Image 1 (cartoon, helix red, strand yellow):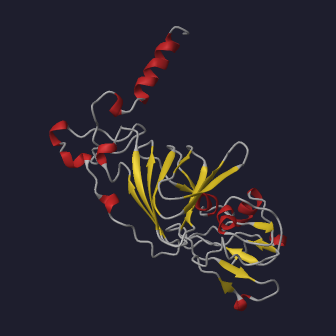
Image 2: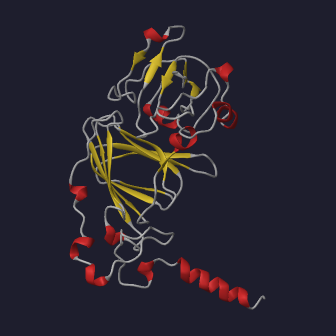
Image 3: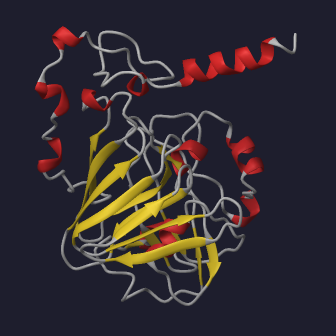
Length: 296
């Protein structure tokens, strides 16, 4: 039996190789299903030069939504020539105050190149929970290791543009808040596994279109709130109560729905809203503490 183990190991490696490693190229055949190694190859006779050209990144994305951000993908589903070659690209447009919430790419590492504007970007180590973030200017490049939580947001006074490259034709995108709270787990289970407590008013808020309820939570004893605090709210939970700084995300489009501050002791009718372009980095509201609050 032992003599067969090396053979089985070699065979498994051969099957795990992408098509691009044994062929000049393997243009995706979308008429066949996608598999673990990518799409099947289009017949060479049907391949044209257009399979190796993609013009979508030359068009600015629509940043009029509440996130004020648009990501234009050049993954294998948009660009069939990438199939099996181990890379992809994307265009990131950020209006003033625009943000890409914390997310991961399970299938590859990411590198970002700032073309215009000023972007704060960072990632969080999975082993130490250390945050590595920095303000990036035109011409700067930053890497986000595979599978780590990371984010980007525009802290400048003009729209920002960045080009992103990933070392996978289909790296996937997983938004942390949607994965944790956009599921069909009962609220009691969500509270249990995320250490949320009704008594501390950190219950998760109900997502649009789902039975499950959930909203990212954050509390912090601090004198000032920054946009980085808000971004970090998606993965941080420290128990406290006080004025409210709230995000809610719809399940359908994973968009930021609301950024809200509520002064201590005031009712919901007195809620005050902070626009994303209020530049909270430099003109932050003063608070004793910050809490993500339920809104149903």
